Length: 292
Image (cartoon, rainbow, N blue to C red; front, side, top):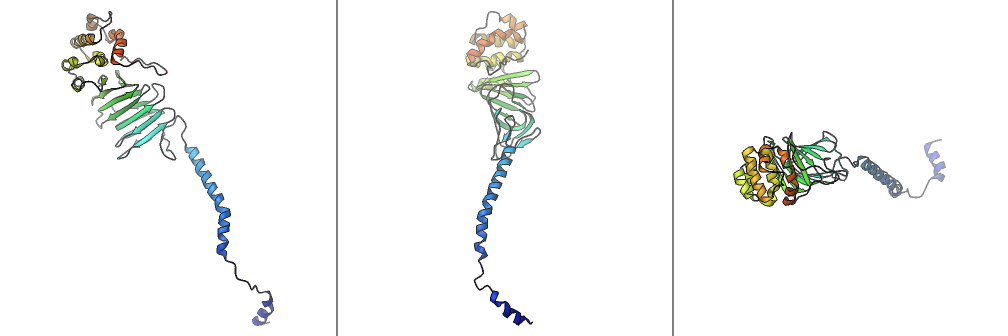
């Protein structure tokens, strides 16, 4: 049987309608399949986000999917800024041209640059080390700026911050600042609204210029100056501070001449009151007086 004869016999089974348009079939299948794929993709994204969402005691960058910081991680900004958050501690705004490293659960190293920190945690939890000093949060909001040579300035806008270097300490209250010198020496707390000439003289260590310019509110700065002073300077400080805030009967001029820094302890409550600040009372008390 030749091919022509075979085609003739099979022609009765030939399909005589138009071929289906498969393009109309494909969208129907997409409508059935793609919603499931979209839902699966959304679920996967949600799972990843939940897995990467930081725990309350973790620091992370603020983003749609936050980057969790681990010990040793470095945050380095150039022209832009960045914000770090911890639900257990608070917020850090990291300024431009800043290098910040996480070295503990709530402890950072600020090599250079500027940060603005606002905390809600108990005192002593949040710590920032600089090349020359350590800033310990005592329930506060503050700005800390450090230059590449280690010099720095701490400005406190709420609460208290403890600035320490070995045995040296400057406890800085709201509205005041303290200077970190290149050699690591710490200035006493100085109120930002004090006379500019007074502030500059204190930073220079020029008592003869500073003391006559001191106001009653500057008593906190003066009582902190005792720890830097020799015998002659202690008497100069005593005379001016006693004029602004009368000393208790037990804190006499001779006691200041021959005593230790603890001699002025009874004077502290009156000085704090005169300066318009209160002792640290957030969950646990930290003595604002410098160590002996």
